[in-house]
Length: 423
Image (cartoon, rainbow, N blue to C red):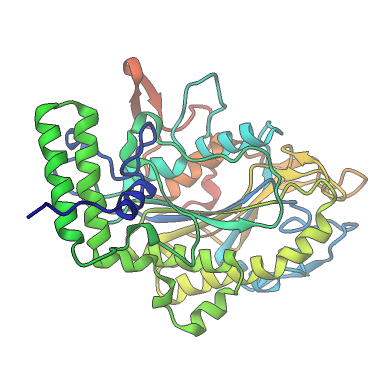
């Protein structure tokens, strides 16, 4: 009797999961030699809400007296955000606003790189993204689930320049993220497709094992390990974390019908299941025509999704151990927000065991350039990355080894962590 063969759709599934890729290796391609023998204790988790293109600070978390949006009171006396975000205003007890980001770079891609790595882009040398760093420091090497997952929350227009995709660089391919292209579909590319899949996978597995035996090279060993972990994830009961249908209709409604809200819900499910770092990205925030009209349309789903995430984590007792960060690669120019602006902009943080209910930094309040100058506590990209890592319990003073035995510090040595928000 002939041996069962993997059908084309199974090969496509494994390829979509990254298993059969060439140069691009997925999160589960780990070399056995790189895996620690003992499991390390888990640290905190992070959900990064990335607004790709650069959201306007004066139309969100740093309103100005003569701005296009009115300022509104929040749950913390003295802290105001725009009135278009009322639910987030009620979450302010659990939030910290960093209003004095000053990050030097106004180019989309270079700024995305800088804010994801803490280092400026130079030639072809790659630095690992913060999600990959978290994977290397917080993830368990033999876990069924990846330590780092990205979720595409869609786009309301095509702009924002070249999209940045997190790479692990010298940390190793096992720390690259698993990409979810649609929160509604979850891990559709790793669902079993037929009762004889076990036989077909066994055949492919035996072939891979024989090849690895004949050619004992690191890359071949990595692919063998990748195969084993892909199959493990495909069969793991914990893969249900990727299925939003497991949630009640009431919970899904609380997060909102928009793809962003459902992505936030999926991020909560993944963190609850043990994923260390989740990045939810929504594209289209490069508002050169002016930010007011665009953000007025986005505010309802952003307010609903992010506030529901904060409340849900808190109700489940997870907020102290889960850091939520909302940001983009820079802010927008004073006034209508039509230009790129890296000199004075905002990020919003929640949970993570931080000293919440406060604002760090300040920008100018009056005149034509209101909000255009940092007047108190400038925060650089290295400052931000170092603070995020410390909040997650990661040692920022350690060094990694890049190609050629080149020592690479986790955080730039110029970084000054924002100790005012750390407990």
